[in-house]
Image (cartoon, rainbow, N blue to C red; front, side, top):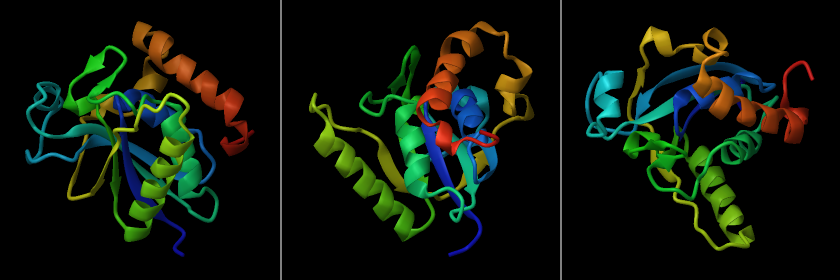
Length: 180
């Protein structure tokens, strides 16, 4: 097993997802961008129109000897709504869909098994609609999206949407955090 793997997650706005994965042990880097669609070199504005096929995603480079894919999936599914198609809260459109973009067959199989187990354990019976797809191409987001939370903590979106997710991760998944 290599000391470095890459997987992409889309769970709504990439500002939320980026900051959550940056605080996890074993995560080497997190980069916001676009993937899963057909338009080459999309811009944020194009993706927001919802006709590129791309989702807002984060590219997570991690050390599987420190953090398992199963742990990353646990955080991913705990911090977004995987049963809502093309929607996360007030963010609506295919660009906000729940998606896992894998690079290896093993990542695909672990993700499929994880979702199957979640579906089997669901008391409400609402099936997970997270798309699992092989990564074709990743397009980095524009510079102003990088470290958005760190640069804009006082913005209402950060206060109302991102902060509660961070609190949840810190309280319920503290064993996975850097500098615990």
